[in-house]
Length: 256
Image (cartoon, rainbow, N blue to C red):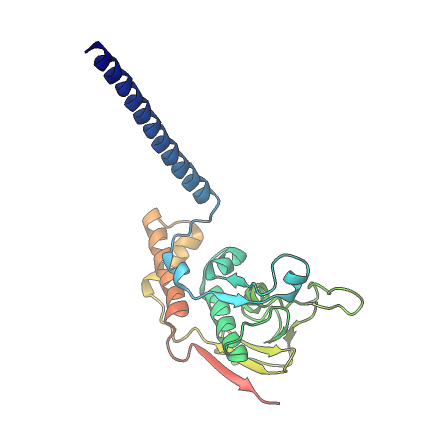
């Protein structure tokens, strides 16, 4: 009997140790999950609107990125609306229109092909300070790589992969006064050109938003009024990106 009791005691100790280690493993696993989740959240931008993630991303090949070792051949850059928001520092009808205009034109220019970043010339009708040409151009540059005088001049004497002067503002061409902007995108390899004209008129605004705007700008809005204004503002942006009314974007291919 004494031998049996001794065996039982040893067995209990073994099971106790196993239980201890089992709980220890579970604890460590939960700790890692919590800490990893915390670190991941800390390293990401938290946006107040979940519809940003529902906007279709734009994929672009970039030969320069491959040549300089930033990515492997066949890989692509993926641009999201959240990237445009991060670049601009805010989300508004101009930023949304710039993103959507670029996306629609690239589909028209390339069809099922993946567009090539750095191989697209962009011409804005009107000067850089015409309406919101300037802010819109920054989003277009982000996605297409097309730049003005401040752009990358390329590799070697021939300037291969350069983006310098691929974006111009043509003061001789006047856009429709009712339009937010008119932009011509042209492939440098085939010469195919497509123009997009963006109108914000079809997207009805909100009288309540118009009343709240002066209060928000002056800093006199309450916390609830500021929150309401932001919600109404982003609802308009959401419509532009996910369900633009007919006539918001006019796309036409230009013939030589």
